[in-house]
Image (tube, rainbow, N blue to C red; front, side, top):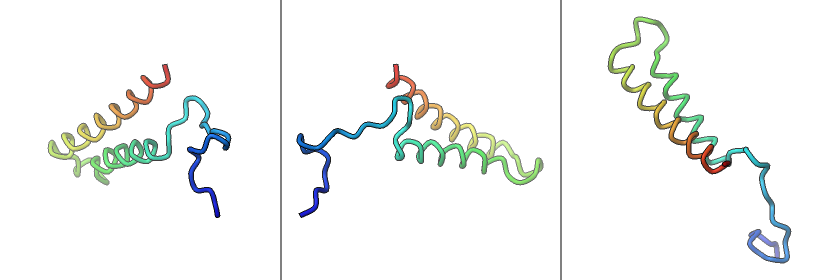
Length: 74
């Protein structure tokens, strides 16, 4: 029988280094920043007011994720 959970008191608790985002949070942050970058388009003429609003929306979501992570570290 394999142990599949680290909630067992007999097992050492695995911790991540302080200051490192969890893989889930890092992936979410990266996704929002990628979407914001994609909103810029490929050329300057691709960037419209609609693309600007879209880029800002994704940047704000990324900032909220990052701010939450920074608050947890303090």
